[in-house]
Length: 140
Image (cartoon, rainbow, N blue to C red; front, side, top):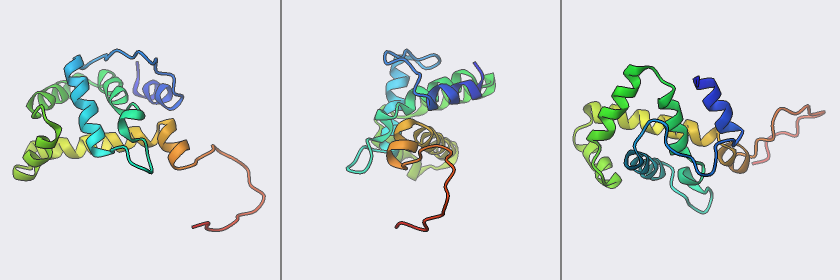
């Protein structure tokens, strides 16, 4: 599966409800889910990364990536402390490669969230390409 197909499936909400990880082990997938939820937690404004199935997107994205990318993600996931809160503290102490990985993790989490139905439609209110007859101006 190519990355464009992954994005199309995710954006269409076409991932099965009983999704099984394609690349990561179930334990790694749970850790990925916990870290992505730490980055974009559920709150009164948004249901968060878990509800948007960000970990599923990342799993599919990495599964369709080049071998070098797959190996880097496996290496970095193995190095992550099993407690997501400990990950943030470890990155603060020694940014290096862990810090770069955490930045990449934040970037893909935000990308996955805002290309999901929850992020783009429910939170941002995007209704798709529409022709409008007049520009109403800023509503904020």
